[in-house]
Length: 114
Length: 113
Image (cartoon, rainbow over all chains, first blue to last red; front, side, top):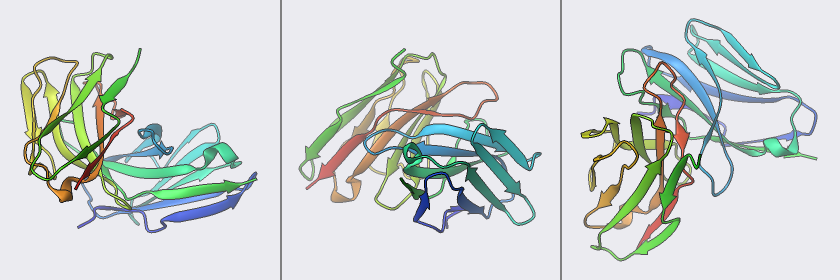
């Protein structure tokens, strides 16, 4: 049972436009959400996070939105750049866990076309 | 700082062989993790450690063993390799504070034939 779902395996966007990556979750006990970015032959790198007590967090071109009632979060990248082409993973943490364990989605391959 | 390093980068094993995947971090992180990523899937937690001498199972521990004798090192052992263990393996570490960010190594691509 996938507790964190990224239903779009891939997304293509023109350079300069907005990229919107979506993530849905089923576990109401998740209290912290993260986005990771992964280039080929490299490990994932942390991009941005949001606590469940917030509905938006912004960092430069990246903004994460959280809709707790819909159990949905999204990552907006504005403007998109060719260097943003990568696989993006959504991850979530259960509240009360002591080991900082994360549950990951299956990822979305973003391609930004020049 | 080198961050999280993993060796080897690639390995081909025959069924039934054993090997150890090495992971070292130089950030003095207490928490360390091993994940596997199968094609088209997310990362699944194999084992984790909250400090030297303390390890615990994750979501998919069968066929693997770990040890944590030092803060820096967290090796993953495959005793009897099976084709189902063909995957990319990532080691990660994190601070023992309220930060949930994990730092990942570059991965080991393992093929069992």
